Amino acid sequence: MPPLPPQDVASWGMALGINAMLIALAQRAPLLTPAGWVHAGILGTLLWGSLGWRGWLAVVAYLALGSLVTRLGFRRKQATGLAEGRGGRRGPENVWGSALVGAVLALIACRAPLGWQPALLLAFAASFAAKLADTCGSEIGKRWGRHTVLITSLRQVAPGTEGAISLEGTAASLAGAALMALVMLALGLISGDPAWLLVTAVALLATLAESVIGATLQQRLSWLSNELVNGLQTLLAAVLALAVAPWV
Image (cartoon, rainbow, N blue to C red):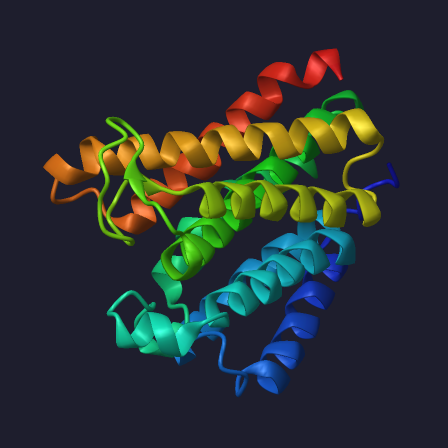
């Protein structure tokens, strides 16, 4: 794993400047709301300052892949009332629901002893792999899932129901987890096939656990929003990765 960038005022100033310039150029893209772009700039600065361009590019790849999957079959999902609001654009709550755990791990990793960094980066990778797995499973399942059931009872339910899964959606979750893990591997944030397999596996497990939370707690607790559930999912993936990291 290449060394993480130095932690000094100059490197953080460069991170802020680069992200401000890139957000100014990219904000017309139909990916985020205006407020979402501001918060994405804050997130990008934290990631570039902590992990350098590799950490920043990993999350840009997550955002691009997630937005692409959201747009698949969008008109059909819109017609059936299953599409994301705001034309698929993400707001600040989506940015931090997906990335808060990863951002905290990045900030810890850049200040941690060298021996701890590989495990922390595994957890970082797992958190984003879990979120892309969730996005792929949800969006593909809502559009192409043929037989949607509640994960806790296997009772058939309508697509889009909290806690619902389908064979197609689960396969898409696995593909999304594997793809995000591959991005992390290509960028050098994780290394080796065992790490790729670990990130893929814990991301899928966390995504299935997120469906269980949706089918149980989220049905009963009005304050448990989708964004909070997303945060719990990414946290679970990170914890699982940290727990298994010593054996990789």
